[in-house]
Amino acid sequence: MPSSVIEAIQQNMNDYASESANLLQAGNLLYFLSPIRLAKFIWDMLYILTQTIIILIFKPQLPKAQQTLSKPRGRIAVIGAGITGVSSAAHAIGHGFEVVIFEAAPKSKLGGIWAQVNRTSGLQLNSLLYRFHPGVLWSRAFPLRDEILGEVKRIWKEYHLDIRTRFETKVTSVKRVPCPEDESEWADDPNRSRWIINDGQEGVFDAVIVTIGTCGDPNWIKLPGMPDNIGQETPKTHGADSPPSQDTCSASDQKEQGPSDERENSEEEFTKTILHSSQLDSPEFKLKGGERVVVIGSGASGVEAVETVLEKEKDGVEVYMIARDDKWIIPRNIMIDTFISGQPFGRQMPLSFLWEEFLRRWQYWGVEELVPKDRGIYEGTPVVNDVFLSQVRSGRCHYVRGQPVRLTKDGVVVTGRKSKPKNRHAKEARKSKNGGSVEDIPEGEEKLYEADIIVFATGYKKPSIDFLPQDLFPEGYQRPDLYLQNFSTEDWSILTTNSAYMNAIGTVGHFHIGIYTRILLTLLMDPTARPSPKDMKLWVDVLRFIKRGATGGALGFFTYMELTIWLLGFHILRPDRLRWLFFIMNGWGVYAQ
Image (tube, rainbow, N blue to C red; front, side, top):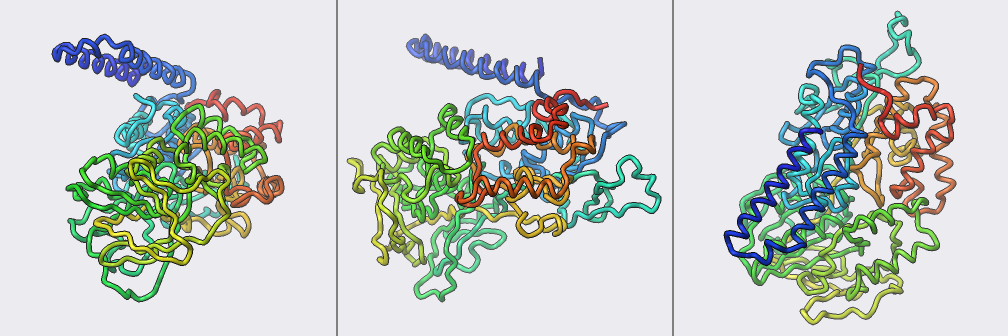
C-alpha cells in the first residue's frame, strides 16, 4: 500500500482519537457517543479507500532513480509548473519519456495559480472530480489551498521532477530545429518536428506541452477616480500597507470584463482601500467592524470575495456586489454537478430548461430573480457555490445590477444596465425579512454606493503564447479552435493542455490531463497514428458544422462529457488506433524502460 495512503489513514485515526479524548476530558458524552461523528469518520475512511483503489490501478510507475532515464523514448518540454504541468510531466516520466519543466516564477510558486490564491480558497467541485493525477490522495471532499499545494509538491517530488524543473526561466521562444545535413541522425523519424526552447541549452525536444492556463495577471478595469498607481505591476492600496502582488486565478474563473473609461476625472479620487480579489488573503487586509465593502464583479472571483469578507464575521460589515451580468450558480453537489456536466452536446438544447427549472427550485428558492435572464445553463461557465445565494437571501450581501462607471472620494457610481427581456423565472424583486435585496438600477440612472473598501473581482488576463511560432495557429485555427481543442492543427507535437478553453461545465484538473499527455506520447511512438494538418483542421471544421449557432462558437463552450466523447472519437474514427485505447484512456501497457 502506498505510504501516502498509510499516512492518511493514520492521520484520520489520530484525529478521531484526539477528538474523542478531548470530548471525554470536557465531559461532552453526548457528542462523544454521537453516531453522526462515527459515521463521518467511517465516511472519511471509505473516501480514502476509494482513492486507494484508483491509485493502485491507474498510477504510473515511479522512476527508480533520480537521474535521467537511461533509455528514454523521447524528450518533452513542459512550459509551466502548475497542476497541469506537474501532472503532464509525471505522466511522461512514468511512461519512459524524459522531461524538462520551464517555469518563469521562483520555486515558491510551484503549483501555479494555487500557489497564489488566498489560503481560504478551495475546490468548488468535489475532489473526486479534481484528480489531476492518479496518485493524488485527498483527505476531504473540498480541500483548501494548502492541501492542494501539498499534493502538487508530493507528486512533483515522487516523480523526481525537482531535478527536471528550471525555475525563474521564462520561455521567450520555441523554435523548430532544422533537419541536419546528415539525415541519418533522425533516420528513425525524419518527417516530424524537433524543438528547442530559448537558446537551446536544454537540448532538442521531440514535443512541447504548454500548460500556462488561461488566467494570468490580475485584470484591473480602469475607472475615473482611481489613483494612477492602482493596477500597476505591484498593486498598492490606499489607507493600508501594500499587500503582496498575487497573479492568480481560481480554478473555475474566467476573465470578468469591465469598462475602460478614458475620461478625465471630474471628481476627487477614491483614497481609501482598493484591492484586487486575489489580495484578500493579505495580512494587511483587516476589518475592524462597521466597514462597507463594495465588490465589483459577479463571477467566481466576486462570489469568492464576498464569501471571504463575510467569513471574517466582523460586526456591522456591509457587503455590496455590483453585477454587470447574472451568472448561473450551481451547488457543490457531486451528483448534480456530474449530471449537469454529463450533457453530451456541449451547447444549449431544447430540454436544457429542465436543469434550469430544477436549479431555480433547488438552488434559487427565495431569490428567483437572480436566475440569469439572457443566458442558458449551457452557455457559460457556471459558478459553483453553496453559500452565496443564502448570503443574498439573508441580507448579508446586497446584490446590485448595474455598470460601475467611476469612483468618487466616497465610493462607486453605478449606472443602470441596458434593459433585458424579463426573466421567465423571476418574481418581483423584494427585500427579505432580514434586509437582503436584489436591486435593479433603472436604465440611464446613476446611483452612488458609499464604500470604505472596494474590491475589484474583475478576473485575470489571458496569458500569451507568443513564444510559439505564429504559423502553428493560422487564421481560423487559433485558441480555442484547435484539434481536440488542445493540439495545434499544424503540428501535433505542440499540445496546449488546459491553455485553450474559454468556458465549460466540468473541471480543468481531472483525468483528461493524463489522457491528452498519453495521446501525445502515442503519436511520438507510432507514426501511423499521427493525424495530418488536413485531418486536424477537418476535425475542427466538422465540429463547427455540428455546433453551428452555439453561443461562443463550437469550441467556446463544452461539457466534460463532450470532451470525453472527443477523446473516445480519437480512437473510434481511426480503428488503427484502437490498439492504443487502454494505454491512452487508462495508462496501461507502456512503462519506463
